[in-house]
Length: 382
Image (tube, rainbow, N blue to C red):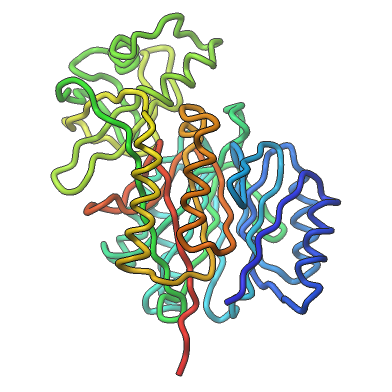
């Protein structure tokens, strides 16, 4: 499988970059498109559709194909993958029936491939990513490989989208099912945020809606531990700091903890929604802002993936939490450069609202403040 990555800040730049990429006979069949909500999605969709290229599209909080991150642009990974090796699906979930929709996608994928792997993009800020993963597992089994990210909207927290050829939605899923017998897919999800304080108990929750922790309103106790002030609906900067730096760490019996920052606040009862389920009775700890070593941990984790499971790759896809670049700033450049240099193959990446992947030694999870790196390689045939 041959891969090329391109980027641009306008439809004209993307059109020119696409023409240059196919000038040598390269014939992509699939495009992973990460772009800003300010870009003309329909123009991008029409451009690729006219070329007969299938589209996996997600809006972002920033995008990159190398260590130079941008906001307000388009980043794209083009693959000339055999169309018999993948299927692209697109569904909406206006009834919030996330598990049912994901299970339906998995059933369709299983009809085509005995062992499918999934790349997923989701839209809507209150989507419960855990339910989507459980739906895939219901049909494809607990050992299923699935990776992806939740759409962003340049930190405006208004409306985000997933899209494919001729279709888009602000409340749905776009999904690539890959035939694992033909395409090797390996990934790793690494965070690095440190926990602080003693374990606390979630005393009331429904799915990803967290009402109380230690019988206090979830927002109030989180704000107290974060030492934050002026928490109000109009103060988006403080709310962003809360989500970025003072996330909950959901403790697991097996594997590493997973991050669950507050993303949407219900001001009537001072509860909030996280990106994934936190069952009532769960044990959580609060987090502290990161230090330099979180980037080193990510790069070392990816390098170990190469050494132990994936010595070669054709392409790399990165879903990195938007909170990481807010917390780490210009230092993120070093993390992305370090990840790219592991295989030094064409790459595309986005800053997402949440990430999907398997935590080290753990379950398939919806993550936050995490970098999820996915390496792809077409298997050779005898």
